[in-house]
Image (tube, rainbow over all chains, first blue to last red; front, side, top):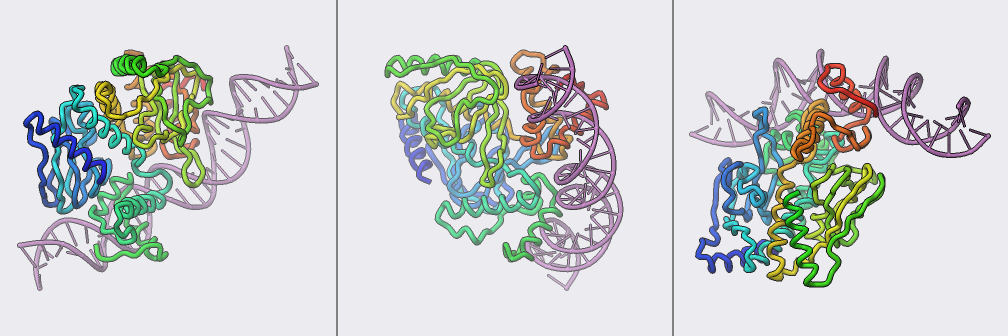
Length: 199
Length: 199
DNA sequence: CGTTAATTTGAAAATTTTCAACGTGCGTGG
DNA sequence: CCACGCACGTTGAAAATTTTCAAATTAACG
């Protein structure tokens, strides 16, 4: 959250200077959209609570989930280079977030610190890859471990995950089928590698 | 190349101010490394000619190819947030590139345009995903189409590809086996969807 | 409760991997 | 120049994984 706080502060400063609204805390129910692919990228979105999926419709018309995000992550940065968002951002559960107006990157000196911070945030993404390769079993395990580590990284209990996404969405993300995900999960359960409670 | 030229110019300017070496055109043979994962990220690399793979060694000790890059692309930007490179950059053939010293992002006003340009470059990456999902056949096709489109995008003939990477490297990138890649390629060849010449 | 959506499970079909063999091009040393 | 070894690519066939299709269970919700 550190980087976001810095960034928020910087943008607030800039906003004050240019009389643009700075930030707003919002809350939306599951299924609702934070921003749509292709629409003008005017803000970035800092998640405070809940889980968001980034998703897009492929050329053949089906959904392709690109990533999942939770508290502490900032979405919508891809809009910079292209002026529009690259993905739909959809709330998977009840999501609380801050909308931070994207400063126009017009290379004015006052924005140097903002740009610098953005570069830092953007480049972080390259370190967290997409779904892993290998067998589906390995992909599912890597998926769970990633969720766990990200949770632990924020000081929470990484051993107790509440999956905000459906099997369908996990399968889509991992590039496999819902039945296969289910089977692997149950398999891991039987091996006592994990424990499944409720849905 | 437009963005790079702008960027190069900007960095040169900055370099003149701070008396740091600005840029250097280099050339390396296949197999040689532009930069190593984990080492201090001091420069970014603009490819002028040839093909480079970004690759890393996974926890279990095997190679994982993250992407392929050709003329007009800039590598090493991920170093910003972490001070070190995230991947090994390895030349697949004879590669010509420019090394551009990464300005320390210290938020000084003179660097605002540079940062702005970097943000633009970085965010572009989110629009070009990793390997596609679906069957291997689809992945191979998507891989070839991507190469073709990237070539065409630079004004070259997109119908005539010279694959700088081995079957092994394609397989690794697509998350499959060398034999499977070979079979799909031959299959496409038999269907007259593509034509394979030489190695 | 009753109805619907989501998940699990089973078994056959399809895809992909594995293992083994074969071919080809290329450079080295004889 | 030729033979040899070696890396790379191709091909075949059996084994393993994954998908598909169908049905059974379970969870969610009014």
